[in-house]
Length: 409
Image 1 (cartoon, rainbow, N blue to C red):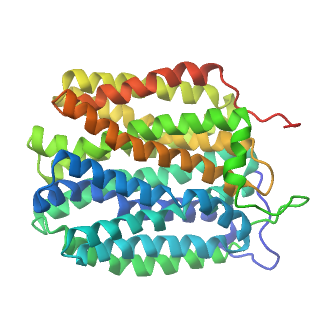
Image 2: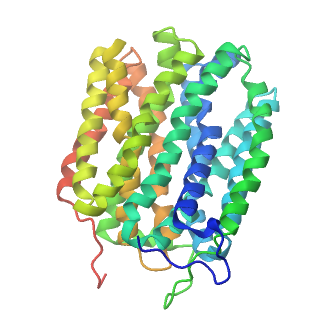
């Protein structure tokens, strides 16, 4: 595995490839743990504040705007302060956990929503430096390295709803506010560990013969056809995921009468399979190319969405959620690896910022589109048909669209 050498004088195990990847991947998973628990909180918040379908959609939209809007700026910060990537990751993690704690301490609705949104803002500062760190240190195994990072987040997204749902249902009596306060205790210790491990690996490698990063780089990347294609791919995946996730907990709790544990279990299935398969997915994309894995994932997601829309419940829904969970999360890592294959040297953070900015657009639009669909075509499981309708055109686009940037672009 080709790896950039760590800073001279730093020879501890913290600088080795496996330790480096594991720290970033596990830290990513823990960060997502604190954010993903919101899916289990949502039915409890809806009941506490008597939210309508419109209120649920607006809460989801606000969350996505808050969590996605920094991506226009974070890519620049990552490229500009690449010598401080380890500090950025540690601050991102503890700030996300602290924001969720403050949300739990707020008895009023809008201050609670504000801090939930701030959790998303803090979390947004993780991806550009983390993915850039892996991309620059493992250029020949980029797909696999980024996939391990994605598996970490998949584990957090899967385990948090499952285990937090169990804790709320059987230990804390659905007191989600107490949970987020208690969860802050391990967050402090974990922040120290993340910073210590990454500090031992030294700063990221400095690019040579590159111009300084500009704040507009995130936007100017879209002049390349390959980046427009990949941004569209990320938009499609994010729309399907965030659109369904905006109402899936409510569908499970209200339409199928599940408790917090049942909601958490089914939400976990949306990402669980990707935890195991993700690194293999990334590995094979390094070997056979990126296009086939991306198209195959879109096909699987479309079929899964249509199946759940038709069946609506039972073991078939569980199987379909599980199959989608293999691809819906892990394909994002292959997409990001493809974008970084074409990234100009020294602008990796801006490319990642661009990719996650396309997720912002999807995250803002998806809850509103799903709201309209539910209003026009009740029951709530219409969300699965809408998601499938968005994914299907992308299958054909990604089968033929450009994925690489020409050297003279």
